[in-house]
Length: 320
Ligand SMILES: NC(=O)c1ccc[n+]([C@@H]2O[C@H](COP(=O)([O-])OP(=O)(O)OC[C@H]3O[C@@H](n4cnc5c(N)ncnc54)[C@H](O)[C@@H]3O)[C@@H](O)[C@H]2O)c1
Image 1 (tube, protein in one colour):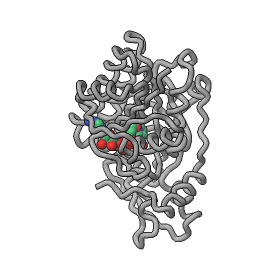
Image 2: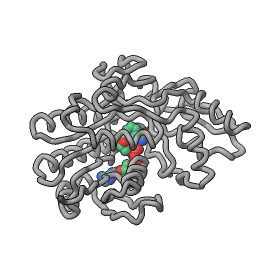
Image 3: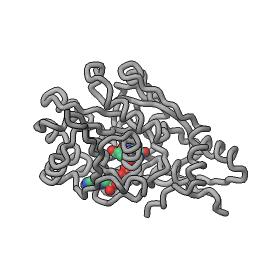
Image 4: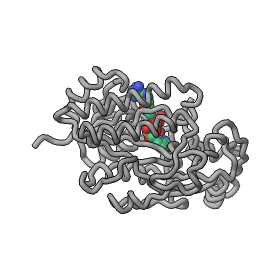
């Protein structure tokens, strides 16, 4: 039997970089697709193709040439950047996803797709603990696109037999690549700032509690969901997954505990308005029941691992 070939679309981004390293370390056959080449040295030896996910013909040719069996479609406009350019965000987030789903519907080789949704599908009225099937009235272009994307995935599952799997990620915190313009980016950027003489300036209110997750848990969630038997997955939507829930103040207090003298201040900007519509935490009972989801990294472990990575000099260069 031919070997599985995993394609990561948006492979040079924050999540794609970590996903690529994880699949490479597991000995999988991997091909990376993005508009820009990877910045992280540890994945530069993997095959890389410059492909626009909105170009259906180019995408189809690339996936066919490599005999791709599994797609991780991670190319997207994120929440904060999306509010600044709504048409671009909607077009990228919808067209990219529909191109992949169309290809999966007719391809003989492409067997399975992973596409992440987000906590941004929730909005005011979802409650502080968002239920799996809770009220959703997203307040951002990004959230609207993720909500619509979930419904498109359900449609392709039901009507075209596509095996597409999805989780609602919270804010993701990792070390290998800079964040791409989301509302939770402060929780990565702060670690780049440690050691500076100036206090770190956070763009959210210090008490704005949000769901968060270390990249190790985020990547493991995707890989575990992708290897779960299809028959056990009953949920029609992207799965709520929960790991951590903290405010800037709680994160900074933990950093200060581990780095005495660390100082910060909070000067909320437009991203606070986005964050205030999101829940504090997600109820992930369905993911736990259907495919055994369990987070592993707690707040102390997250801060320790980010500080160790920083000392090892693998923190990203900040995005411009
Ligand atoms: N990072 C988070 O905190 C977070 C939280 C929830 C959900 N997600 C979801 O996870 C996925 C990955 O997010 P991320 O943080 O890695 O994003 P990112 O912005 O860091 O990376 C996205 C990558 O997609 C590439 N890209 C953009 N347009 C493209 C196109 N037309 N064709 C090909 N590639 C293109 C970019 O060059 C970039 O490398 C997204 O779907 C995002 O919505 C992320």
